[in-house]
Length: 88
Image (cartoon, rainbow, N blue to C red; front, top):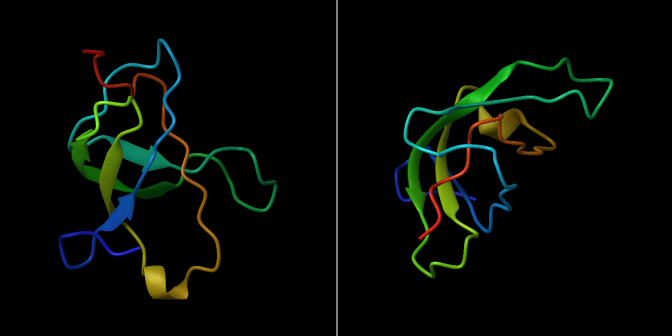
């Protein structure tokens, strides 16, 4: 989807794992090794904003992609180690 900023992606209901760390603006999002056709460690984009308006532990992130989204056919977002916001 399109985020509030012209070219940002809005990723809703991000499931967070315990002990991962904090999500914040500037955190890089990279490819994983889940798909053998996509090499791990490629920069997908950077987080521009983290919101959890419902305080349900499933935040929304806005992501500025590092590629032309109009040419992508599939996107799977996995967060790096150290990427969980503090619990309230």
